[in-house]
Length: 258
Image (cartoon, rainbow, N blue to C red; front, side, top):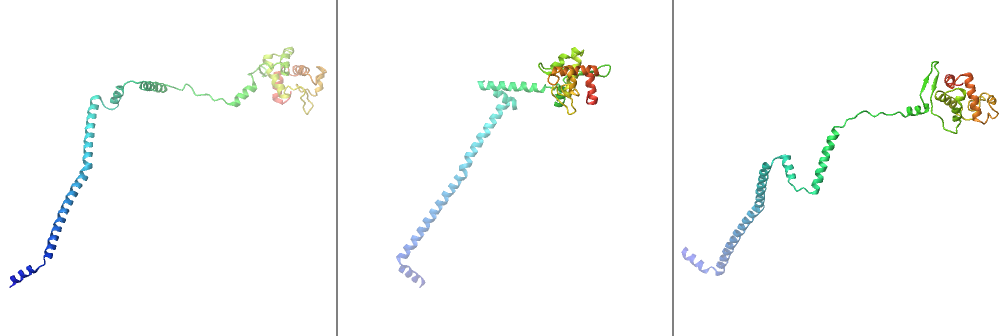
């Protein structure tokens, strides 16, 4: 009975349903095949991506290792370190620039060797400016005679000055120009600056600072304006009172007048 019913149901099943089932089966099979082909392409593509960069890098590394090995072998034959480098440089063609560089290198070697041999002979002497000024103001050396009187030597004065008149007049009074001129120069530099109309508040006047100034009238009536008259009187006074210009100068230093 059941077999008969099953046969009847199969006979009465619509043809469209059967067709639909078959089309679904075919679609399923097509999807499965398409999925299989897609996965295979992905596998091939993944292999390409993994090996596409590594393989060239591996080849480059092999080439570099081979180049380093060959270079090491060549260097070991030719030498090592700076010697091999120097030999390599020497093997280059000697152009003009290379020759100039070599000359400069040799010059530096010579200069360095010379610098190592330099020695300081002595320490420079520093001059004190105040000492120089003091030496110039003194203008000469000084000495003392048996009586303890200091004499000063000085160069001759400039021509056409009152100092020249005094320098030239010294021998006429028996004074040495070499030993007495410096003392006379300093004495009247201090008293009047060799100015003929110099006048002190006390009444002293002229180059020798005669007190009073009218004393110089014994040497000439122009004692107020003529340096020669004043110097003549002054040298006579020094010889009469002190004996020499240096004796008068030593008295001046001790008493601030003469």
